[in-house]
Image (cartoon, rainbow, N blue to C red; front, top):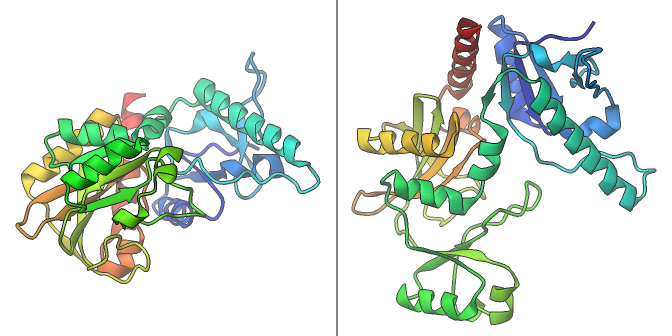
Length: 320
């Protein structure tokens, strides 16, 4: 018999958040299934028919088939990660297989999932682009650092000179989960023309201070933490001080406005507080990590996010 979960979680392998949340949902009496989307080539189990001869299914982590059309809420948690294609498949065929798995999965979801997405796949993809984020933050009225995205060595050098070299550099799209790149301060000796023109990067005004904000927005719920770190990028190593905090009303409204502009139902925001107390935008991750704040700051975010999913599920049931 196929599984018919209320909540379907789509993710990649070894995603702690997916399993923690699915277990919490089951503890609350809500049926949930986890599908690791990058394992389709390894386990099979995808099925779809144009005439609806049978249910459209995906394999869950236990090898069972999940009836996708039964889900009322789909948590679009992670759609990255290298596809796990059997070793005997050669390199060219591996790329083909991964592409076919991805296309089939997207087509199946587009035609069969009658669910509320947390968040919409296309909105999530677009919002992951930092240029799109920056424009939305500006439109929402947030203080956005002066920013240049460029691969023009002359334009970059002029921008850095205008900023008196108080400039950081970071990636536009990121290097992937296995190769995280830290935000770093730019020095004149690092600004090589050949490297600059190789690919665009984000060159941005350096915001001083040691007070950072990590803000988790689940629908209308806002759970903020203040992090204390002298490092420019506090993520590695994760040894900063952290404590829950309350955002001022104006900033909270601006962040929910950003979600509206980006078409998202949730988002994990990074902000910074200047020595003068001004809150400055840095970025949003549409599906960022948040459970680490349970241990570091004592914030009950697993329960909060589970409440958010259950509330979304109840809204869907009320509409049907």
